[in-house]
Length: 518
Figure 1: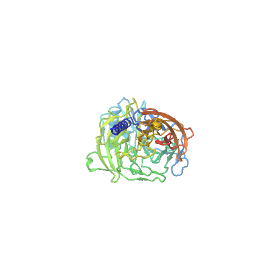
Figure 2: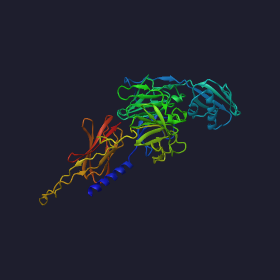
Figure 3: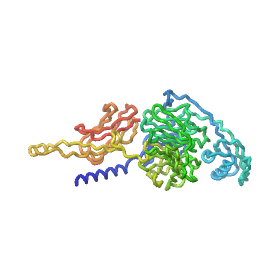
Figure 4: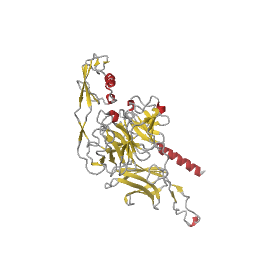
């Protein structure tokens, strides 16, 4: 009966821990919530919507190196050959009306999504600038859109549309000079891979050192500039085979890159629509943007910014339409996505700060998961979790795995007295759990060590390096079923992985967890 009660208590506690489990993900954000300049990288708490740790700040100078040679990247700029529509008008026409007219212009000139997606937010007194490619005609507009074979629009609103080259350059040596909307977390090598918008180049942040590495002069896609929206890469993930994958907006370029010392980049070509997709196509411009996740069975899942979901087989490069996510707020674009676990996926929006949402891959039904009043809107998310992955067996250093330790309790004085010669050691008892957060943690920072169901008594928290050397310690006394102790890290630690251990007075291991110091 006691065993049954103990098991029930343990199960109840595990359920409580899982319910309160911190969910974190790396996110590309702006400097502040609500802005739309994608130049900052943060580790965010999905539940609170707040920053856990700053990973990259555009205002700070960081070492930028060539990924092949390790040498500093030379300051460099490239020409932006995109063209611009400048609309001069005498009436204040709503943005929606302008876009509707420009969409008709798009049909005349056979221009892809840039007209709809690249509207410049900086309106001017005499006009508004819209980025577009492959247009060489001048268009006059006066009212009731009548389009002739020359591409002239007649409309009584009295406006003129001029086409000209931007004449601008793109500074390529800055890590996030042109913003980014594609991020992937390489858990094995502790890196964040990404690609900047408008620049066909693979880059990564080394989370151990904070340094940024570029694969210079190596094509990563075919994007040519700001207005080349169909070729922009906004989806990236590390798949179950350990390789990274990225997909262009129009899904005509599935790019594979290996991780590790000898990175190889290969364009695998276009995705193919499954025959069951009907009128839905993974190449549709309505799906541009969004993010990508992976499962444990060599599949990718493309989540378009318009909430559509496609399952992609890495073996056949075939995309199967699964449907559209239900239950999201009006206007909530799905720009970032990570797997929470099993079939649960977290999505974020680049346009809204109202919250983060969870949906199920089996039902596509969404629910709000964040509790904060405002969260960081983000252009992309990344973590190292795969969908439908089986639970791993106990592994030392994994804070999500509950280590069970058997420890004998020394006999008390009463039990060893003459009156108690027949006394014996107490029965072997299941020790409790230990977890450490935040993780990763800044050098010299303070972590919280949480204990649950540990046997009462005195213990020592130890910080240990890879060689087994104890770098710091703190004595604690456990009196309660759940207890949290703060542990200050030394200020002189090198970036990397460390072990936090808890040992009893008899030097028996009672808990262990790996932490990353950044």
